[in-house]
Length: 80
Image 1: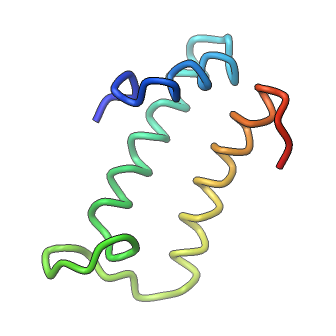
Image 2: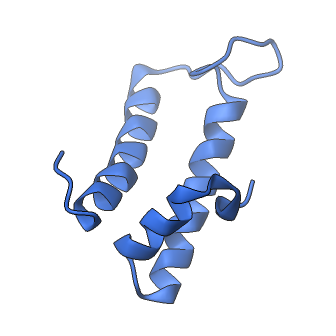
């Protein structure tokens, strides 16, 4: 899924990073987190999805997503 399909998220990323190369890295990070969320059993429980073996893996993914959300919120002068 391309981040442009996210609508307002693309605008948030532009505010989070006016520098084009870093913004592209943020878009890749967002796409990767979406892919990982859809293919693991964090959100769904279908048999075709990967079951994460350790709670630390869920925590790791949570912190990656939280960092991206926090960056966007701070860039738009919201607080976390």
